[in-house]
Amino acid sequence: MFIIRWILGRIILLLNFIFTPKKLKRETQEQVKVDAQTQNMQLYQYQACPFCVKVRREIRRQGLNINTVDAKQAEHKEVLENQGGKIKVPCLRIEENNKVVWLYESSAIIEHLNTRFA
Image: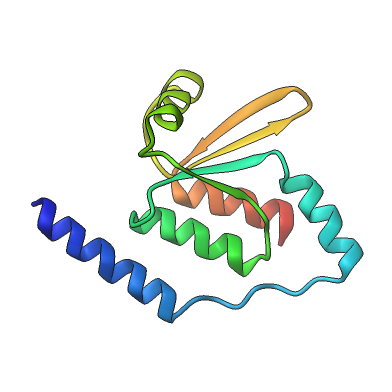
């Protein structure tokens, strides 16, 4: 099973590389505002997870600079479990007004990004 998942993961990454979406071009001032809003966001993800790839593609499509965190690393996995409540990816951590929100599910994350930035 591990080998099948590994092969499928590499196929997903290859197709993502080949068909990378174009980045949204904004005016400089507008991009600076968007970058300031995304500064306190982190995407906890696995590199070859198809749902994580889906979210990363949307982040690129919208031209957002959201920090990605590898949830396979022990310290990040621990933060995800202790602060987020569960080890599940993709997970978008949003910190605003001294309040932290953890969004799970790729469709919920994409909907949030579309509502806020599109």
